[in-house]
Picture 1 (tube, rainbow, N blue to C red):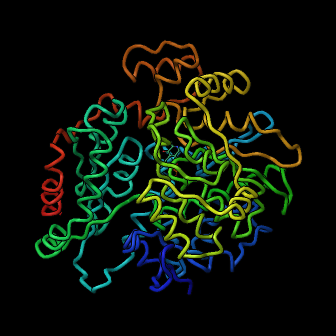
Picture 2 (spheres, rainbow, N blue to C red):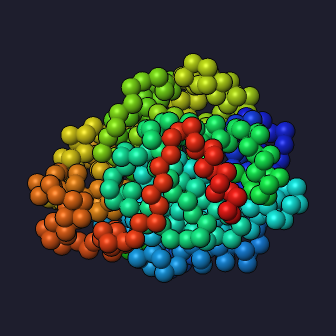
Length: 495
Ligand SMILES: *Cc1c(COP(=O)(O)O)cnc(C)c1O
């Protein structure tokens, strides 16, 4: 059986179920497995397989302490009729390139791919200490997309509850309504009088509060956990769509078995693109993974210089889900690229914690650059690309996808190697920016912007977004930052 250990130490071994339940290692490292790459996935029979069949093959290799029946159940529940396309992540032509839509899930964002299945995987774990009544309370702070996708995934999930905090007045109207209208008996949504950083750092403090933890355990049998993208249970399901893309290109007779493919990946926390690296290690013929950033281009600088420097100004852009200065999942890539050296990762991460910066050796950077190419787009370029993609292809992209589109346009195309751009959000989640870029009417409410975009582009509006205008608001709480811990405790008592 493959076991997991921290990127910063290989002393203690965990099953994948334990790793998923814990989320993060006690030393602050992320869970990795040294078995990654030992078993290759057979790509010769991918064509014709459904997304669910591919998911079972991939998840069986990486989460091998789940039974086949458990995985099949999780997959059937997570990738069912709540998706608006039966291929789950359909690949479509885009000029001479291809685009893979990751946003056909229930909240119209790429996070659904992972957050639809994580709760199901978590429900099939059991507490380490044998307290079978123990429940898990997911606590998360969100700047927009993650909160809704996590709520949708965990709503009414067995043995769990979820509490989401968002900064009052700092998320879009659509995003706020997506959260405050969430159904489910185990969900809690609360605005915070502060900005995202205040909410985020307070959630981290709540996780570190041992008194609170023991009170919750004793009084309510509740353990706090995070749905952050560092969880193995979020990362591994994302490996599946890379294999699915390959299967679809085989079916469309764009490639033959064994041909190489490039992927262009809008990235923030490095989770989306790291999954592609896992796919490559599992035998998928990936030539290059192109890391696309927005104006917060810390990854571009790292991949071109070898120095990661988080001490820099933070920009609020039109692609908020990529506005990140510390890309947590990069630590896993560094682990594999350092020839799996936990001591080196410990040094690097200590430097990051102490100085806000670290530097990798030149040989390591060379190895990294064999796999990862990179680029970034500023705000003007994002708007230009939304218009350019519409003019050339009659396809509307959102601002996150536009960062990737720009970077793809900058790269020389190789007719021998197809390129797949990963599209991470429906343009209808960001209708105002998209309308501005396309020269459409962009005043009025978000819903008027959606209607205008629909009328002028002829593309369907996801009903889930359009219906928000008249949906019942269930949550109106707003707390001071200092009261967030207390709020979590109340929610835990009700669980
Ligand atoms: C989360 C997100 C991304 C970035 O994904 P990472 O896993 O952080 O790399 C890109 N686009 C959208 C719309 C997202 O929600």
